[in-house]
Image (cartoon, rainbow, N blue to C red; front, side):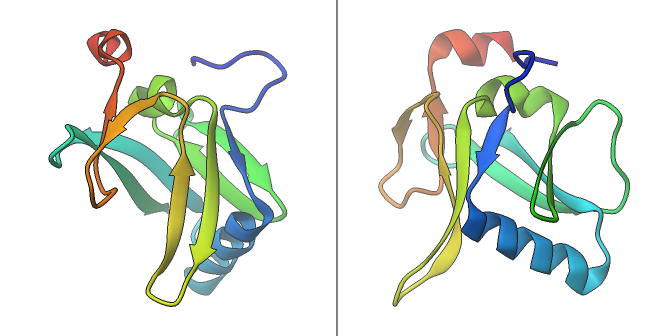
Length: 121
């Protein structure tokens, strides 16, 4: 929808691909859909949901058995994002390195996009 021919909307690191593939296999899901919604102290939050059916309007990115679908309304917010999976002593989880984010709250759970991008949504 908002892609550039020959360029994937998001990139997935090998660690994230391994985790997504394991989650898909565990419960027989078709993939993981990522998106954004209004909320949090910075204004927007990422969403992640298991998918049992692929929406034909989703942007699909696949790597090493992992499949990520990007909800249509989120594509312009997520274009260029790298999805990683990090493990530390205190927490483990998916991390989004998104070049479109201009600010984030202190806990890192919510984000803010450039007003020009937000106005298009």
